[in-house]
Amino acid sequence: MTDATATTPGVSTVPHSAAPAVRAVTAATDDAMRALGRDLAALARAGDVFILSGPLGAGKTTLTQGLGQGLRVRGSVTSPTFVISRIHPSLVGGPDLVHVDAYRLGGPAEIDDIDLDMTQPDSVTVVEWGEGVAEGLADDRLEISIERHHDDTRTVHLRAVGARWNDIDLPGAQPGLG
Image (cartoon, rainbow, N blue to C red):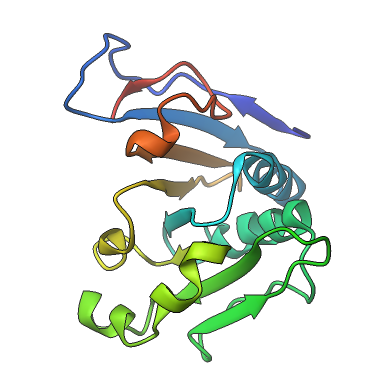
C-alpha cells in the first residue's frame, strides 16, 4: 500500500468476543486512500457490504475509487450524492460495484426503497454516509470510519462485523476492541 501505514488503535488488544476487532490504517495521501481501497477490493467478494462514515471531505469517495480500480469496474467512480446510487459493472466477470450515498436519506426505510436487495448478492455494495442507516443490509459487513486530520492525513478504522470476516486478515495494525 503506497503511503499507508498501520497504526496502533490506542485500545486494548485483549481479545473480547462481544466486540468486533477494529484495525486502523493511516493514509497520508489520496493515493494511499485509493491503494487501501485496492487492498480491500482484493479481499472483497460478491455480496459484501462496506459501510463508510466520516465527515465531508474525509475520503469516502476516494477510498471507493480504489475499490473500483481493484474490482476493475467500468466508469469513473464519483460521489453519487445527487443520484443516490450508481452501478459500475465489472469489466472482468467479477462482482459489480454498487456505490450508494445515503447522505440525503432519512433512515433505514429509505435505503430499503433503493432495492439494493436486487443487486447485493452479485455485487460489492458501498454505502457512503451509511452509519446508522445501512447496517440492516447485511449481518456480515465491513464498517469503515475515516478521520481526516489537520495535516490531511487520514486514520481509517476498519471494523469487521459477522462471520464472513472472521478469518480475513484486514490491512492495518493488530486488532483492538471496537
